[in-house]
Length: 552
Image (cartoon, rainbow, N blue to C red):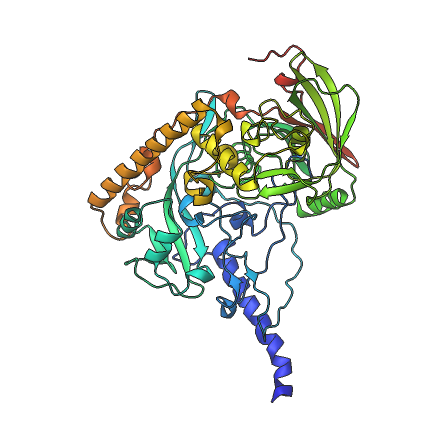
């Protein structure tokens, strides 16, 4: 009997993976069933792949490999059914607050027995593909030097996490999705906004099972970005090269979807199914390259792996930078993937950046930067360590790092205290978007009232208190309205407000936010040049790097 089982066991496991892959393709790859929505949940959901690993000194984090889909029979047996911190979607508030979710990202716990894992076939790099139905979700408008997105309806989707199995939806929402009061979820049920396995949820007391699939329809608001256009630097049969303005993310992430380079190129330039060759931080401007085909993408990524590509940045830093060339080889450690903060630490990854001063105006210096490796925030962290942080860097030139602002790696507080102070500072300024966070992302550990904030300053603390009072008032009003709201059951209520910019369930609609000034969305770091075998692309020197630029 045992001998007879040897041949069919691998076949059964392989078949399980194939069936799961087919289900994954039907849900996320465009072969949707009759009850599935046509909207995607972002770049990963649309393409089935993550963006490539960053290859510049200012990219937003090391990309991790895609995990293979998991056989439904293995769900709940040590398989994590949601992204973990440090991946594209982080935290426990994805379903309610807007982090992009990919059901294909799971992790199998070590120690499980009697399982055979069949390695998946090697994936080709697919382009980030969006269709006309995605672009038609909403529209842009321009106001006060900003590009804005009209609020729209969107589906966030997730598989049941292992720790939710056996618990009710009410328990899960009350313990993990605390961005909204329970009254919101009760009203969302009455409005037909919550679906479990593509069936409308009738009662939050329903108990979750292995591999259950949740879909939550929300009213989505995107932060504004600068109205500066995305200029095409070059286009041929192989690549598209653009000059990315500051403040615009490369691809959908967090609260950003339509206000991204990928969507703007698709909607305004009809450039679709592009393959990002590298990434720039949202606040970084400059040369950004996309391949038009998978073969070109593979070729250039091989050049990246072989260290055949060179990048050059320009920035304006605080103080008088040394006239001679400076090389910094300090290792960099990621303090928090969720908040997006790094620092110099002996336990970090090795990296190297070469700096050369171009000019000095008596207060600040323009510096050319050549990152020889591609660590997260490499240029910004090395400049902070050297005591010359980027002049308007909202993270690494902050008083939250202490009196010396991180110079020489001196930080007189723990990582936890540092993160709380950074979050508190940006919360007070209503600028959490700089950290790619929203209020719902803030766990108790990031909002501890005992945080040592002596260096934040009196004005900053007063702003924080005012912001907290304002937020409390909005939540209180929203809760009262939800408790008295009479909503029609099923999809009728959802259909009635489908094209409206104001949603009765949306607390964000009740919150009046002051728009940032366009200059507040610009950081003085610019990707000046990107070159490799057979190509070399430049973008113009930004205004703030000119010799006659005056500090305002």
